[in-house]
Amino acid sequence: MRIWLAGMMALAGAGSAAAYTVPPIEPIYGVTVGKEAITVRVASNGCTRKSDLTVAVAKNPPRPMVLIARKHPDTCRSVAAGHAEVVYSFEELGLDAGQPFALANPLVGDPGP
Image (cartoon, rainbow, N blue to C red; front, side, top):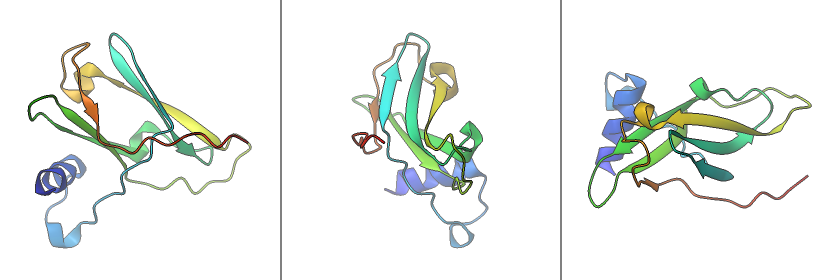
């Protein structure tokens, strides 16, 4: 767990652990893995942007572990509420295209409308 905390702090640019709150791990409603990128489906009130999320990648064997956390809550109210799809290229994640990886986030079923 220390590795994740250190990774999340580094990604967020935090100066000290005492002044930093670890972002909550984001539940994932779906994931699609393509040749060059992965697409994750997250809950949204209609205003979720990629910049609202942060990603940590642990490159420990047997395969890299990707974790997505929410830095900023989506507090808006919109008719587009439901889900947002966010795309991360393998290059952004520091992985080779098509490289196997594990996702640390919980996967949840879509309850529907």
